[in-house]
Image (cartoon, rainbow, N blue to C red; front, side, top):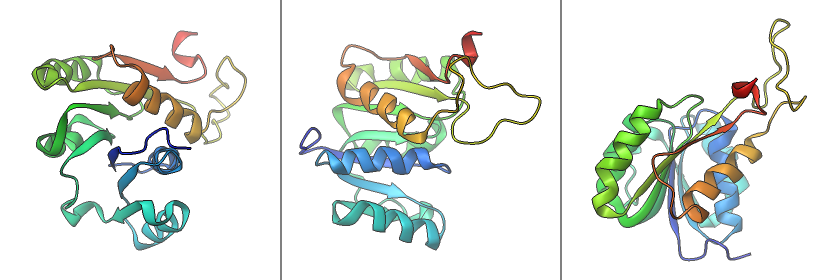
Length: 177
């Protein structure tokens, strides 16, 4: 599959399987990926999962090679901000924190509109972890997966070309019940 062929993506600040799920889909689609992973074990696992189309670095590595990226996936505005000068005009930023502040997403989108960079967010909830005894399952009746969040993030980054400043809940309906 070559859906993302010719694209360069950076995936940073991910402490969950969401970042790896995004990177996997990008690599499967032909993109070159730079992914951060904090521990040697996480880096080894990600490297084995992604193969040679991805480079896995430590968060503090300085992210050499981020220059000329088309797509940036980050857990927060603060994580994304240092990489913005390296993002190509016309690119996309997708924030992936559980509840990124809507105002922050809209503000960053407004800031980057002159460069035709779209900024959106997914807001995952009830992903992969068992709910506590006091927390009910979402209305869909099951937990979500990192893969489902990745698909939503990639939609915002590559398909939603007339969308910026938006936040898409990926929470099984829990935010609407």
